[in-house]
Image 1: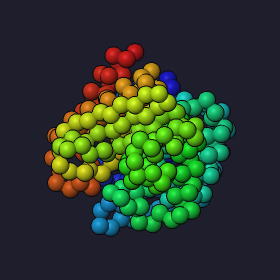
Image 2: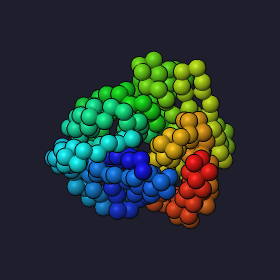
Image 3: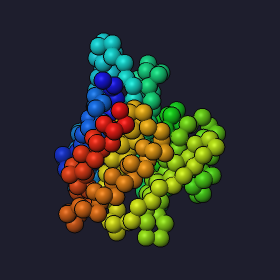
Image 4: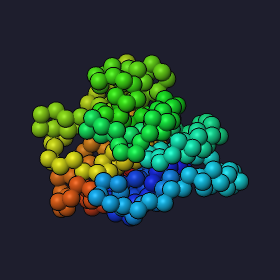
Amino acid sequence: MKKCALINDISGFGKCSLGAGIPIISVYGIEAHPIPTAVLSNQTGYSSFKKVDLTEHMGSFFSEWKKLGVHFDGILTGYFSDERQIDAVLEFIHANESAVILADPVMGDLGKRYKGFSDSLCDKITELAFSADIVTPNVTELYLLTGENDIEKGARVMLDSGVKTVIVTGIKNKNDIGNAVFEKGAEKAYYAPYSGVSYSGTGDLLSAVVMGGLLSGKNAFSAVKTATDFISLAARNTETANRNDGIDFEKYLYTLGRDAIEKR
């Protein structure tokens, strides 16, 4: 079985981060190996939360993995709470040169940087993003990464720097919402009806579905279409009234499993 390292926080409530990534990677028939950056009582969108930062432990976690002599086919990164965590991750990436690196550059949304994200942390996230094979920023994060307000221009900045695939998420288009894929010489957007609610955790779901698809032999365009359809289906059938709870994706994991089996 292929192995994927997932580097992200884990939240007790709010369907996001490792709580979203692990089941999705697993349903693709890929081993999911998590390294938590922090443990949270519930994700940060709620009115209050408690967090245990794991910065001081991440280096030793990676050292123990190194002793095992394992090879990773993919490395998927998400939320970081300290720039020192990213230094440890970059060293881990350099030790797994053949792995597919997908960075979800968690920094902000709705035109604003997230509270508590310092300039130094955002600079390190940018360094990691520009070192990845695939990057999945939302529109705000693309601007923070490149300084470009235009989506296509921002994507081109990243492609010209050496990133192979840029996937811009959460693009509104009238009554639809979707994701645009940019590669050298090719681009395409995939849209689905907008449910009217901006649920937390959809970026984590998308990056995990894309990674699962890529490690299963799909190209980025096919993987993003699958992710767009999956998230749309779950969002339209989510029961919670609180956006911070996330979408009810669990009920539709079987569709990804079927997709993975058909690909094989």
